[in-house]
Image 1 (cartoon, rainbow, N blue to C red):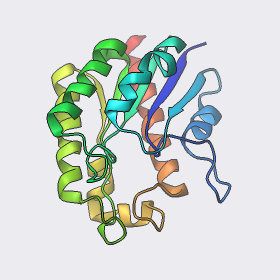
Image 2: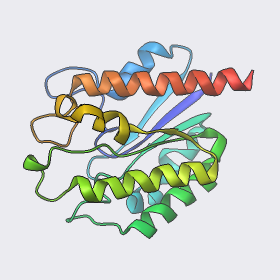
Image 3: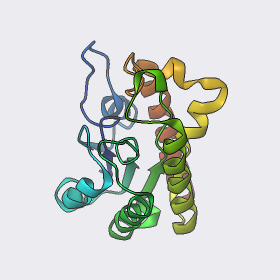
Length: 189
């Protein structure tokens, strides 16, 4: 049975919202019934902290595919990881996982009015860096920044805190990941 590990921050962490709707990994399990889906998300985490747990929380599962969604905390004023380190951390993750098995997902925009420690100007730099690294390394890539930015779609995809995904966003993201997994396996056949 193939294994998909979802590695990330609060956008990935937890199976269910406080309101009771399914977040990312349960939605993937419902669609990839012949896969093992592992949730390796931790709220508030940066790429620096993620590297420390990469072996235990990702590699020990011998994954066939790993999604990597970090950047919202790396770009924040209170947890700041500078851009060169963010890029280096993603590079190290890709080295250890392999490019063929990695789906980099860019961080999404926020609603700035509710997020005083983050800005879209700064977050876009991290989204652009994720795209650059994925292209340079030949990884699979989901440009969540562009999808959410189009027509300010993020205003309909985020909770009232202006940062975290709502049910609609999880449905959308799970569909993007499912499409990417199908593309990867269609090319492998």
